[in-house]
Amino acid sequence: DVIFLKPDTYMNLSGEAVRAIASYLKIEIPNILVIHDDVSFILGRVRLQQGGGAGGQHGIESIIECLGGKNNFDRLKVGVGPDPGGARRAAYVLSRVAPEDVDLYQKSLKLAADTASSWISAGGLETANRFNGINLANPVEPKPKVRPPNEKETQALSELESALDEFQQQLSSRNVHCKAAEILAAVLNKKPVKGIDADELKLFSTTCVRALAETHRVHEQRWKKLIEQKWLSPFQDEV
Image: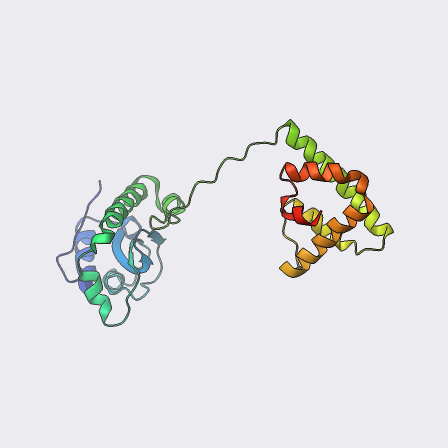
């Protein structure tokens, strides 16, 4: 059975109602879920917390006190922030929802209801993992599916890797800093280069491409083809 309780007491005395119903119905403390608003979370967020302190929330403080200091009950915090702070906080949480926030508010209520329902059926840990990361105010766009390279792109990559190998050998013979070749290879593979800032990165990459253009004119058509296929578009002006 599921019992829903809305205390008739003031919020600061919520513990009296919780103690009375828990005692009368013999409800174990871990089976209690307290749902309350929380200005520390923006509207559009919920957070399921398993046990812990009151965090300055007077209603939770009252419940812990009335349960004999026991805090091993779960809380579902429904975001209503941002927190205006100070004396304005009480007026803010009791005010009407701003017209521009009504749609998000309704969606937040639905999210909170779904979270509570999941807590009942699936338990706290699974529910927290599922719902705590949701942000209705700033939803995460789904990542596009990345298709594997086609035959033409695979061939272009193979040519690029071959050219880079030759490039590194040529740089060594010309006593050009071999770090440049490593950096260019990392850039072309879209990998970060540790310890290299943007200016150094541009300098090294430019040095690499110019050295290649000077010493490997026979490969000019190969590089132009790679540029046309967008593999070397960041360095097009340098070749």
